[in-house]
Image 1: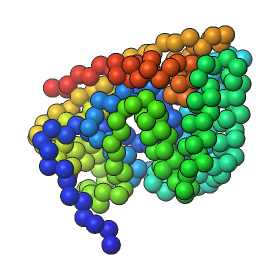
Image 2: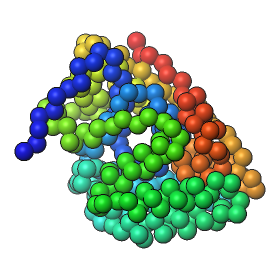
Image 3: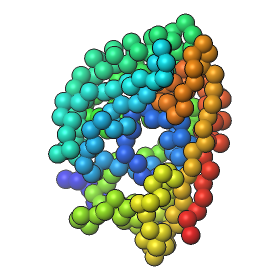
Image 4: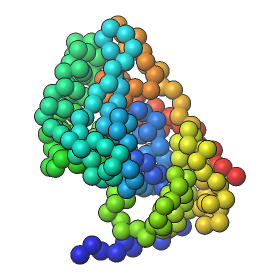
Length: 252
């Protein structure tokens, strides 16, 4: 029997609530570092061809290219929690193959190569959510970034039906007794600060700063997957960029 969720009753809990992305860009990890707990938002409709099953790395000729995890059931008719990886080995082989072009150029290629292998090889089921969480956790451990998370579908929260996109966060924050919620700045249009204020929750937005680095002899591209960032930069440099990577502003 599923246990009823008992909320954390601290009065200083800061939450982030995001879909489970596949090796996301650096700003995603800056947001993780800025919150106390990360709620993996996996209970709504799955969005095919989104950041949940693909991201971008450098293309050896010019620009960027996708690295993708094919699904066996990609459809808007499923919930995110039900998305299934088609074949871990094939996905890993394809991604490692695209990364291998930089083997003799990127100073930290071997670290990233090992990280990708570990994330895919350690998967114990075909859940995309679990795979992406393995990726987030592996990167955070490598960088020394605390990553405390809970999976929304496993919390047994008594959420109202038919919530709009801007209503999920205040409801979840209220049920988890959070005092503050931080969302990426790009989502400001979704929220009404009054929905948080009347629950005693402060609403803040995080604006990601661009982290520019050398990918010589290739041309730098902005906002690529953390895999690309890690290939070209030491863990200390990336960890520092994560800590300084966002500006947080409270919404009044």
